[in-house]
Amino acid sequence: MESKLIQNRLNYIDVCKGFGIFSVVFCHIFYRGTLNNIGYLYHMPLFFFISGYLFKIRSDQKKFFVDKFKQFMIPYFIYLLIIYSLQEIFTFKEEHLSSKAVLYAIECAGLGGRWLGGFTAVFWFIPCFFMSIVFMNFLLNKFKPKLLPFIVFFCYLLSYINSFWFQSVRFPYDINVVLAIVPFFYVGYVAKSITSNAVLMGAILFGALGVFLIIYGYKNFYDIKSSIYGIPIITFLSSISLILVIVAVSKKIGFFSAVFIELGKASLVIMYLHQPIQILTKMYITDDVYIRILLALGLSYAFYLFAKKYSLTRALFIGSIIDINILVNRRKTLITSST
Image (cartoon, rainbow, N blue to C red; front, side, top):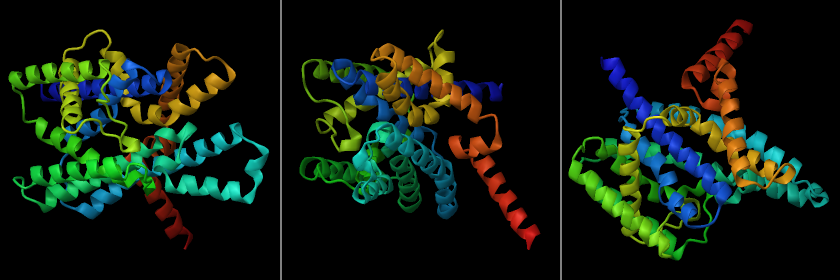
C-alpha cells in the first residue's frame, strides 16, 4: 500500500512536470499572443515550485553541492558543447572564421545566461536551478524557520530592484535571477503541508484574475531569464495560484496522464533538445507550429528513451548520480590498477 501511494505521488509530480515542459515548448514555438503570455505566467515557476515541494534538507552542504553539480552541471556542459557547436555549424557564415568571432562565441558559451540564444536559449535554466537549490539548502540549514519568510521576502524585493533599475545588466549564468526563483522554491517547500480546500478555491479565483489581467493587456507574466517579473506581488500570487491549480488537477487527471507522465520523466532532455529540433525543422522542413511542437517533443523523447538505456548516456545526458559515481569509481579503479 505504501509503495502504491509513493508511486501515485510521483505520478502526479511527473504530470506537473510533463505539463510544464509541454507549456515551455508550446510557448517557445507559438511565441506570441495571449496564450503565450499565460504560459509565461507559470511554466518556469512551476519547476521551481515542484523542486521546493520535493526538497529535503541536506546537512552536509559540501556533499549536497557536489551531488547536485554532478546531477545538473555535467549534462549542462555536455549538451552545451554539442548543441552550441551545432548552432555554429548550421548558422555558419564566413565572418565566423575570424578570431574575434571565435573568441566571442567562446565567451558567450562560457558566460551562459543571456549570452546564449538560438539553439541554447533555454540553457540559462539549469545553472540557475542548480544555484537556487544550493542556496535554499544553505538558508534552510543556516536560519530558523521563523526567519525564513523574511529572508525570502528580502530576496523578492531585491529581485524587483534588479528588474526595475538593472534589468539590462547581464550577469554570468544569470545568477541574479536566483533572487526571483527563491520565493517559488520556498512556497513549494511549505506548500506540501497545506491541504486546505479554501486555499485551493482562493488559488482558482486569483489564478483566474491573473489570466484576465493578461487577456486585458496587462504584463502579468514572467520572463525570468530577462529579469522581467511582471506586476509586484500580483504576478507572483497569480503564478503561485495557477501552479496550485495545476498540482490539484494533476492529481485528478485521467486519460492524458500517461502522456504527461512520460513527458515529465523526459523533461530535462526535452528542455535541452526542443529548441535545436524546432529551429532546424523551421529552417529545413516546415514553419507549421504544430509539426514543430510534435517533432520537438517526439524526437527529444526518443533520445531520452535511448539515453536511459546505458550507464554512460544516463550519466552524461540525464544526470543520473548513480551512473556518474559508477563512471568515477571505474576511472579511479583504472588509475589505481595502472599504477
